Length: 281
Image (cartoon, rainbow, N blue to C red; front, side):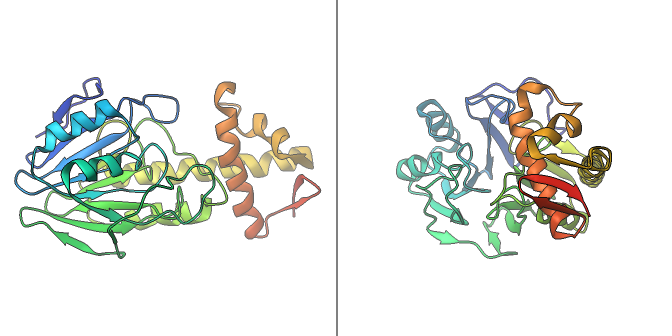
């Protein structure tokens, strides 16, 4: 079945394939696009990936979609738009909660998230009708997991890749060098389609991954070029120079990714920070 590209409507159950349905949370926004996607997998015993934020209406929509068949709740990571809904969904269904606990409390993590079982990198959950493999993809968050639906070769990417936008890398838990390495890793996986945490499914997955890597490296070059022109500059002074193609209304968010780029470049010995100013080495 070809994934639909119709408007994403929160609470609406959309059949994406014979095994996969999508229910989107009512939390649209600049950071979340149309909202956070919950994916229901299977037709007998079911798994659900990313129950999203706390929301009574979203909980009701997920419970209606899974009925009495939900066995496993999986979270890609513990940011506040992806995992807080897990607690109520577990209470409502009795399903087992799987994933990585938060590695750091930086104000963006779900402190209520307590998995029944911590997954191992590469671990396969054999659900009979389908198999899901955990793929550790840190960078956006240190505890980020993607899930590969073997057979269909769909990769559920959470916030590692989202449709229609790049993801924010927020230090200290977010790490640009690690993020790029995690993207590179996907080029070695046999994937047919990306199912992101926000937006529509993405076809030609390896092409999309290469595009994202090229975009990040192009942004990195803008950082270096801006410092070459300026000599030295503060983080806030660099922001409008490096993100001149981005609306000012999201510069506060872009500032985090800029900081991640600078940290990466500093570790590589290409830039230096002194007294709040950055310069090339």
